[in-house]
Image (cartoon, rainbow, N blue to C red):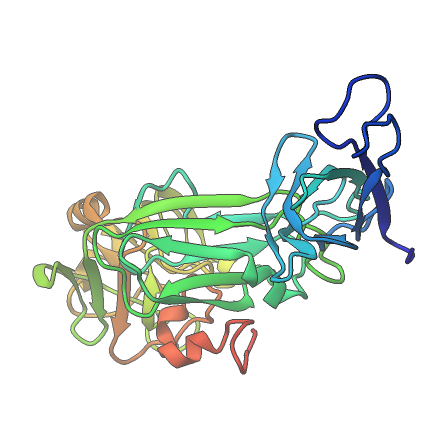
Length: 392
């Protein structure tokens, strides 16, 4: 027997025959029939088996008919039989710190059992998922975004365990890069903006997956689901000093605004962004974004566009410049009335595109949701499963 495998034999008694304390053979004499054994080998053994790999069950002679691998809580690892019936391999990895029971049966109705326990994880990786389960409806530009607590070196292996299912077979791809925090992050965006009404389910079957060096194991699965709401698009024209709201392809409102002061750190970001959160009334302190003591005030109807602090919000102190000059510290300001109305109608996930002169360029991809500034081919290349991945 090879090291690292468990060989188990289960004695089976033939059906039928005579009565009494012994098995009955073909000639009717007790004990004359040779005892039949079924022997299986399992790649994981003992009480400190290595987690993070599939369970493999093999049969020396004959063919397997059924293999069932369950954990101590009754959960079952799905798996596939080989074409020759000699082996079975689980589709999911064995999770850390888990008791497993293996039950196997061959085509002659003989059976054998095995048990093992995996070693506990030295380090556990966790994730933050957007949209979370509490977010029921989002806009057409909202990606699925997963930020990891610890580094992910095994990006391809992790990506294989992530699945997005949509109600209308939306085409999309995962892409890896660094979040604004510096942590590893993977987002899934459609090829084009979502269609209104699309229902989305995300399954992150990560339990038992190894993140790689320095990252640790995942010890649970995650999932989320959401629905795509109204097709609403916000366009900020820096040259015209206005924000246009378009719904279902029709312009419904034009709002005079004052955006970031051209040149230097107070300019606005440009390009395609996504309305990340609706934060309402918040304190904005210029020192937290590297702008010295320019401002420190409570701001109403605040809607975040980047992690670095670009917002759409009410700016009544700047009324004189709405519609004619960009004089803010980077945000897009408007009147209280316009901000209140926009805040009420806008939804997290709405696309916001900033065009015109005087910006400081496009924000880094991880500074919010910047993936829409990439072409489809550029985005697909960021998948760890692409032929030429370009992981950020």
